[in-house]
Image (cartoon, rainbow, N blue to C red; front, side, top):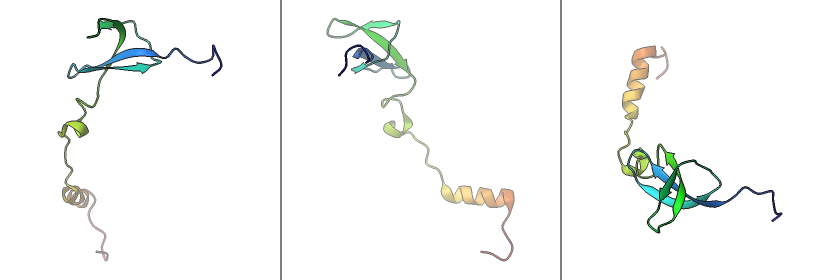
Length: 85
């Protein structure tokens, strides 16, 4: 790699603002906030709105769409075509 052309790649803590869960990884993102991690070091803190701990798909709380209900709703709103089934 050429020196001086790549962004600084350093440890960063990402924290889910909904659940409070956090994980340490490496990133090029910067932040003014910091947090003391369990290893005793201080790392930049980035708050995220959604992570695997709070996303409906991963938590199993997602809504199941009733496709038959959606078709009936469409037909009620726009009607059906005459002569076609």
